[in-house]
Image (cartoon, rainbow, N blue to C red; front, side):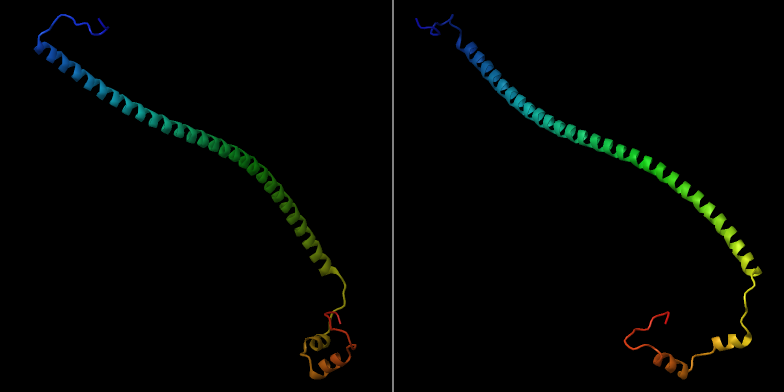
Length: 153
């Protein structure tokens, strides 16, 4: 006899039909379970991919936060340095203002006590009078040829 061709005890056809039905139902259930397992496996793979993407993005964000914090630390240090420099400048300005005030007072005192010649009313009137055509003509004709006029003559 060939292996597998051996028959066990004869069973009634009705029982054999029931067993075949149970076997077929079990195969169908196993096929459905396998399909669902594949579906779950696919979903798990997709979720794993998304989790990996999120983990990479989280790493990027953590690095960026670290960079921002480093920048903030540098800005804070710069801010402190600038505040010190501004404070130093304020002190220098205050010192200069005090000296200018003293110098201004000394200058006013000097000018009020200096003995300088004063303009007479007649000299003041001549200097304040409008220019005449004769004065302008004389000034223009008195200029050297080939030279441009300048503020100082």
